[in-house]
Length: 277
Image (cartoon, rainbow, N blue to C red; front, side, top):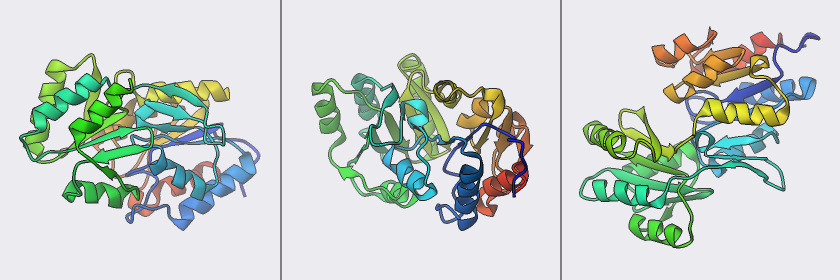
């Protein structure tokens, strides 16, 4: 049983490489641990990820949590209830999406476009199949240029552009983005072969502060779990930052604690330790 002192007043967790196990699902230990903490303490458990909403909400359903969800690294923040109140909605201008498409259309680099719960890819190639397996979500297959035209005609922006391919080609795209669109979008490599492009102003730490403010919780009283470079600021700014054992050194140095590998249920074991379960 947990003791009578709440170690933290809110918990935030990244998804891929953090809360999911080697099979990219929630383990029984993780599910049981989070449910126990929710039952005994009733504190918010917030999923925060670069994923699209429906690649997050099914995990929240499994965990039986109804706390706010942070999708697209903060591009879209919403209440996970029947009202689905939007707390933040930042998008990439469609002219940036056109530019990325034009830069890559003669290459083999895969492009996926995301907007709210829409995921559009041109073909079910290796990269699309990989993301389908990773997220348990199926995209719509349609021409990228026509999709951008459709969204632009409706005055809609893009929540995320994901580009996947040869590491050299991805590096060239990263250089192109920094040279031409530094003020129009954020871009970062989540892997050597992945470049994720998100709206200006998206940052997990900023999104975290926004949600904690709504909940009336100070960051000093929160715990956060992550494994990648886009988690660094979030881990630094909470009272209890936990880097998974599979994290790069820079991420580990940003944390108060380095937990076990995500394949070893590192998040669950740290929560068990933290809450004396």
